[in-house]
Amino acid sequence: MKVKIIGKELKITEAINDYVERKLDRIDKYFEDAEADVTLKTEKNVQTAEICVLANGEKFRAVTEDKDMYASIDKDIDILEGQIRKTKTKKEKMMKDASIKTMGVETDIAEISNEIIKTSYYEIKPITPEDAVLELQAHPTHNFLAFINVETGKVNVIHKLKDGKNYGLVEPEA
Image (cartoon, rainbow, N blue to C red; front, side, top):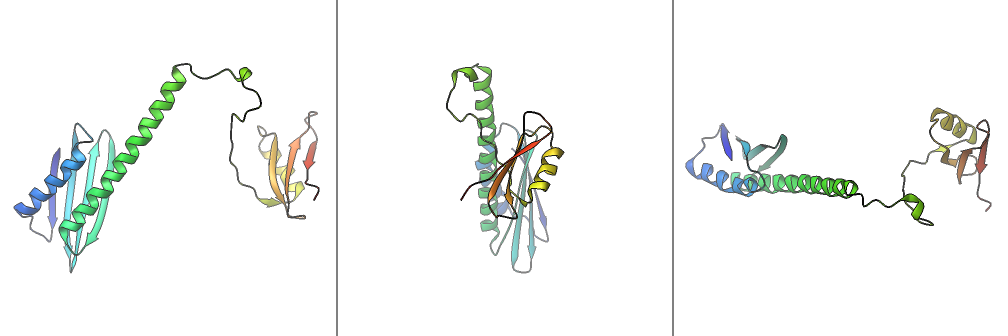
């Protein structure tokens, strides 16, 4: 890993330099070729460490303040390691999902019956049924809209009827 250490209002000693490089070895194990820019600052009684790691076209950054420079560096390394692990986990999950799809493991929808095969999440807003019709008209690809009826305070559903011109309203009885 290529490391560049800059000290602002602070002289970088050999001990600090060795400490930073030794700690960055924890980050280096995640990448084959990475660069790290380390900026160490002192302002009054606060020691600030900023570490930016560039690897595989991605940038990871952590900035912490502490009374002790070494503690600040440790916190930065912990933050960076967490960011890197999170990113790698996301990528691995995406790759795994993509590989399952390309393997043709997807089952034919005709074979599935009486099972929930898709879940959609949406926001339910308190509006009038008339406003719900307008909202549904604004989204021609949607067939229904769940909303909280302002007049009754209950969840209602407005849906397009098969004639394509009219709408139906589903309301709970009790």
